[in-house]
Length: 230
Ligand SMILES: [Zn+2]
Image 1: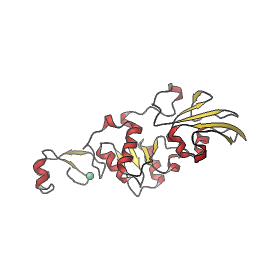
Image 2 (image 1 turned 135 degrees about the vertical axis):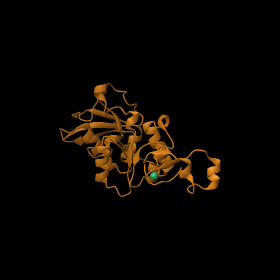
Image 3 (image 1 turned 90 degrees about the horizontal axis):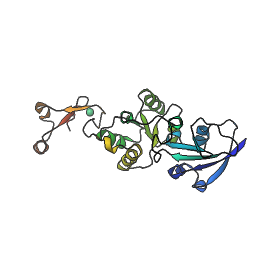
Image 4 (image 1 turned 30 degrees about the vertical axis):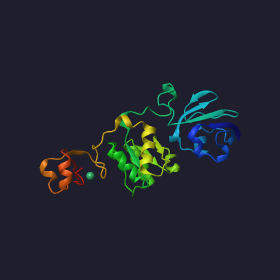
């Protein structure tokens, strides 16, 4: 075993034991450990990391740690993507097309708010962790969860550990983390089904919208899966 020093910045300290918050601390590890392995051993999922600096120079997840190294780790939220030069990015830059999500079973309220804002979000309270991992990989989705172990899974490329407990605060958190505000497109997706909404014809509204609502609004959209009108 050899020892290196670690320093975690800002909100990454949430994943450490309280006495270590804000401190540089030494940690022993097996000689051939990668930075990713050590960071996750210390408790934080790789998805929450935005930048790793080894002895003053940015490195990737697979960099080997040597005795007496100083490893500084910065959170994803506050590290602008693309800040480091191409060779040192921990993951490819996030494009607008990448802003689709899969929410775990405890985040149903958040899933609805994301759909309402127009972001494609898979959610089913019966999804197992294995299914979430598989769907995230197959459909290139960002995993939203309060389960650190799910985010540590090897094939989960992007994710977000959701700290807040209330859906509106969770939405604000995810929105800030992935800069969603410029890309909000309300009434694009059904908040129940995640299916695309389309304009409803006059005949489709009859009997499905209360008269009062119909008088106050001129445009309606409908979902071809659940046939709700919004
Ligand atoms: Zn629907």
